[in-house]
Length: 411
Ligand code: HAM
Image (tube, rainbow, N blue to C red; front, side, top):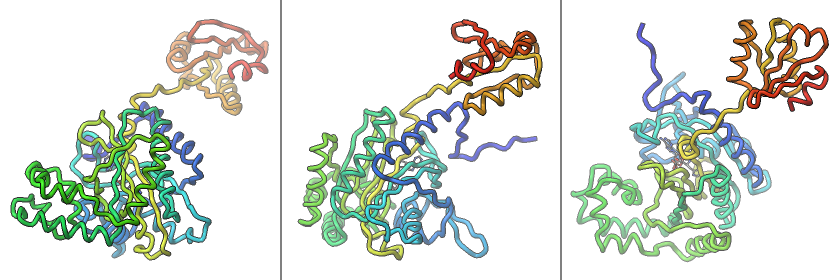
């Protein structure tokens, strides 16, 4: 019979890879907790409307990449990202009544119908943080620090932080109008996507990867607009304050005026962290401020900022981590004695196994040396004397000790 294979763009995370995943998850808990963040877990599917209104219906994510299905005449969508879901939960659970800032972190699978390639999957995992209730640039600085320090805790160094300010809706409108003006003469030469973006979301023109478009946007009169300081005084002073904090804390970053991000909810600060060792899908982290999203999704006016990181990309950078061996492998001709002792050890917090097939002594020892640090040998003499012989499988050192002292010795 034909075997059924894993779906394109999805992957099994096999036991041999789990040590890296546990490491990423444990470090997330450890680092984000230090900043006062609490974990939140929201459902994997939500009302389609949440993403249409939240992420924005001019984005590729909403237009092309959502896994949407109907159930009981409701349109549901597998979450393509988690900011919208966390904002929904924030509103629905009245979290605006909690004392600000409300700092939440999450991890879990996301779904985007994209063309799979190295570093880009259809089901992938994100770890992320959202901080609600603070409009000051201190929150922007703290969120960037959380991202940088998490990456440091994972042992990742060869990374660069890129920063930009998209201004507020008012100053951005002026910028969009100017940008459209200078690009207008070239409209017919742009790729079909850019022609659509020109009307719907001109900021996204800057993000186009098509060579012909990039050449057009490199023209001096267009660059003059792109590189201009278009943001209003208030947005500029917010951005300067943030840079002041980052400079004082020795966080290396560069300003990238082309950084516009692929989601519609951002204003002011946006940032990405990129790796030099990942090929074309090199962004490990993307984030920014989204001061209008809570209100746009029906909540109280609440400023917010956050980020998310692609865990598959982090895992690729971290590389392999060795799995821990079982501590004790109980070797005995009596399955009953073996199962009793193994359970006793497990109850005392020691990882332990025994041979479920009751093979010959020598075979059991062979198996033990493959999977465990110690063989705990229960021969007839040992059983009679209430003892066990412990063999260190790395050094072959052997010692017979009383059963009562066994746990202490193995620990
Ligand atoms: P995003 O830039 O769409 O932002 O995704 C964040 C990160 O998720 C990316 O930098 C990348 O590492 C990873 N990622 C995205 N798509 C894929 C994919 N198809 N395969 C593998 N990894 C992927 C957001 O999702 C925003 N919600 C971030 C945010 C949180 N902004 C504010 N708060």
